Length: 434
Image 1 (cartoon, one colour):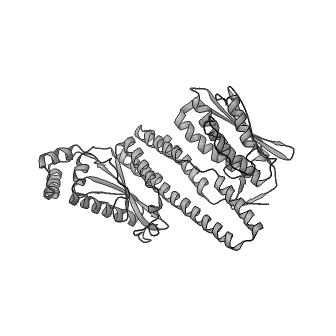
Image 2: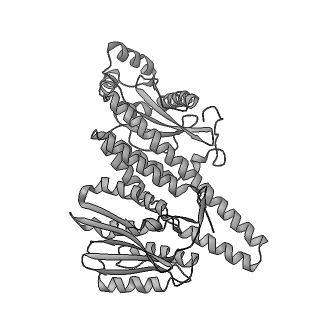
Image 3: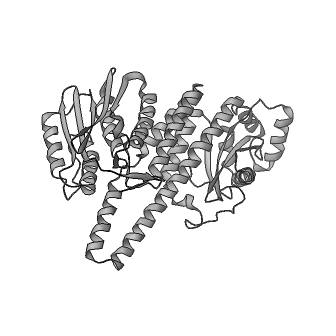
């Protein structure tokens, strides 16, 4: 919320400093290359949190001068404070007359920085604007003719593109920075709790705490490359004018992020896991088009059956990345769930090329050996071994070693089957209770 204070320097005071700079650079690179609009990520005082080389032309020239850079930072701060006052995107002109769009980054109610977009204007400048620019920059020592030429070359964008860029920044970059921070903060708190348990708990209590910590560590998380690929897809759709598709993809990604980072019970209804998978598949279908056809067959009475949170998506991701991605067309993915006595079997099947017999043998041997250890990745298994092994290990930790995963594969068909017991539970406020 606006008006809740300002983050100062230092990682403890400004949580944005906890974020890996490589993630900021990737966001800047993807957005700039896709839209030709350069963005900068600044702290609350307008200073860039990461350096990059994506400014060009007029803006690069001005920023090459120490005094010019100081004025750019001041402009970032001014538009940033305007944005923080409303909690929404703000638009103004910089000290040299170039349009700036700023989106505030608010974390825990504090204004921590801005994402600013520049190097653009809504209309060609007239003689008055050119004259004002030359007066504002005349003491920087640049050739006025060269500076005027580069000023006139600054791109003109439509109001629609400007609004789309502002909305994309507002919904994506700000939310991602906030979610990454809370994710890292939660990891820190978990480590602190484990340390405290080591000091206060007896041997039996510690073994149970370590078991739960291992479950959390094995829980699937959104991979950075998937996040950035999705960002790239959304920005590409905006540029192509496919705003409805971009919005749908954005909603799907937001659903993934909320589900991934929200504090949930260890067990969730199967229906919620399927909703999460549907959001993931909606994004994959947007990237790969109609080459992937999905069919879901689940007995209605199993939709409320409890399953460990975030165990189904890694199986679907394995089918997409290591199976269907290799097909040029007619990819098929089937997800089914059926009751087998007192147990339940969830099957994820794809018509990709399948594992070779040697790799399949190593994979099943690896799964058979994951009891009590996570094991290494499989050489030649396309990276599938570790992800499936983590899910298998989680199932055995939740239940017992008679449950887990099994894999069957031949050319044109791979099946990964998850077996687990059907237990009676009630779900209240997102927490499963026996």
